[in-house]
Length: 362
Image (tube, rainbow, N blue to C red; front, side, top):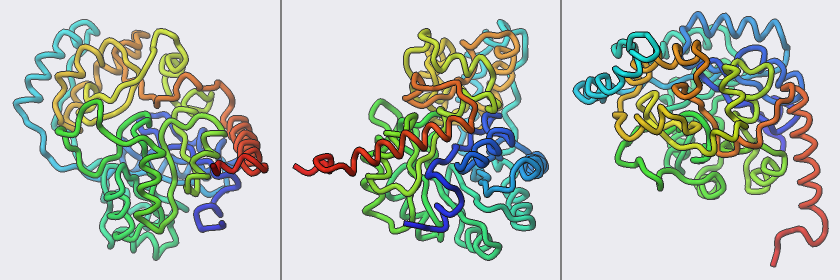
């Protein structure tokens, strides 16, 4: 079924926006050029930094692309809890010969300034993480011809996106690497039972909303893309799969860790940012995860200097190694080639499903 969303690219493959340097203009351009939908991550960047990356991407491709924004976060952090965590991390700072970061950085991520730029100089698609914009914001984008997508981790969040006027929803299963895009950060929901797997969530969302759905969470192979398309998704979004590509801006240590046998699994943790995010289990996550407060972005600012110092020292054990549950399937292919391989795998899997006897009927 042709929609305004699928018209943006040749293949139903979206490269996830990975804040922190993973997805920049080079990666997005390579994905767009190969027939996928590339994304820039505006999170953690200034408004001007975002604009400069958009200009650079436009110089590299004339294909449609997306920009992802973080929604402003309420200041709910317990100052005392953050200070206790600061004391706990004192040994980390001493070990890496650095100071812990200040925690009074902005909590709005330059949201209004970024909105103003994107309304003045529109891009084809804008997506939102950590909440749902107001109808006025989404209507303003509709007026300038920008397609809008809201990340959701529950059927209720997807309904909120539809009610607010979003064109589509990106359904993020608990398998996804990096931050969970929940609209409300609820520390009482932490634990092994937190979040729904992608297929279960996708089924619920498809029955709850009528707008197109992008499926995200642990997808690494074309057969998995075919599976979520068969389950009702319009497109599939992959992040970790693109993290290992040469065009990715991820630290080389991070790329190597994805398939390093030393890192056996991932967990959701607040250790690095104060918000639940899935990463490879390393020493820092094991030692500090159980004690990290629900205090985003204060904890993000607090740990930033240690993370940077660890990366500079070549020590992956104190870096935030964001990765989805499918990380061991990462392939070190150029991004354009990866898109082509994924597209071929998807076509093969869909053809196999279409053969007589493979309908799944019992």
